[in-house]
Length: 129
Image (spheres, rainbow, N blue to C red):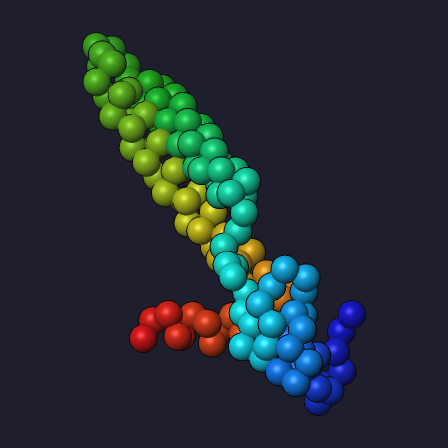
């Protein structure tokens, strides 16, 4: 549901007068915070697996390119270096995307919990200090 421009933001945290948790199982009070906005362990395992698969695919592509460029007597060293370079480049690219996705998931979870889009940025600023 989209909030109209200028409309007040509904917070998931209840006022301190009632002293009831906004969500069952969470601390009560106005200072109740999201315990952890980290993505679940399943998402982190999938990100790690994606990095490994990306590295494997990059290694295969690097090996094929190096092997195709050899005319005669190149041996396995040049193809091995091509495979290593392809694996490192591909795994690095997939790792960047995986980190961005995990950060977006963490920010989304914070926004869902608090109902305030600025909350995720404020949390990051506090951690840096």
